[in-house]
Length: 299
Image 1 (cartoon, one colour):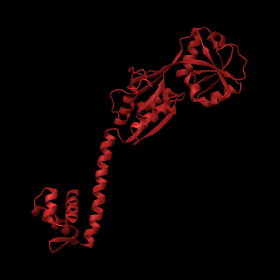
Image 2 (cartoon, helix red, strand yellow; image 1 turned 90 degrees about the vertical axis):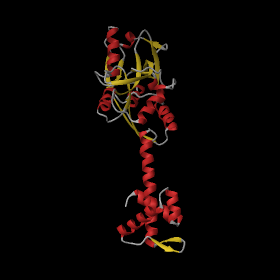
Image 3 (cartoon, helix red, strand yellow; image 1 turned 45 degrees about the vertical axis):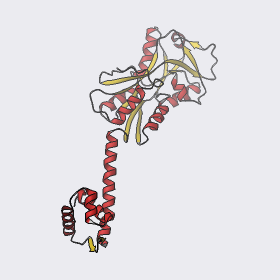
């Protein structure tokens, strides 16, 4: 039996007449009667009994009708689900986000979820260079990363550019609300990220431009732990301003860094000239069209 025959049988059972079922199916009566006979021969059981003007369904026919309804409904739902997945209305969106994260990330996902409630998420957090590798390997489709990075393999959507701030323990007695890199030089520093990578390298390069040797006593890629260490008085750190918005509750104080062009830029990336799921395309389009989340520039 095939799906067409199951649909024929459902119509016969529900209409109780071959002529009515044929009319409903927009086919002639003889071919429909022939299909019913073929089904009975294939199954080796009688499905329909002729009783007067109406057809009666046998016990075997009732069982087939029950399963036929389930099969047809399942196939229709499966077809719809596949179509919706292809259109980006269902499925799973795989995202990576930088260790420093983005204070608006939860808001981004909530806004997307509001538009596409049947799309689920798989989120990975890691260093920006590792996220680039995961996108290249197709382990994730999209990633929010921070410059500086080599992104020639990727399409890029600029999200946000923000200043860095100098963060100390709330117990530290420091006058004023600003500080410069030369003044930071003698302070014990706990740098985010890892030597040679992204943010860490930007900070070291900025010290070099000022001809200052930083007093680095620790490196820590876990931002929550980093801020705990700072609040304990172990040392100070330099992080993008939004990090403090995202990781609240630590006993720290932020100072504005003056006389510097150092900024943190977060971008959304995906592979150039490669297949992108409809869900990922919808996510990109949502960000591109919302000035609250992005400046709209693509690279």
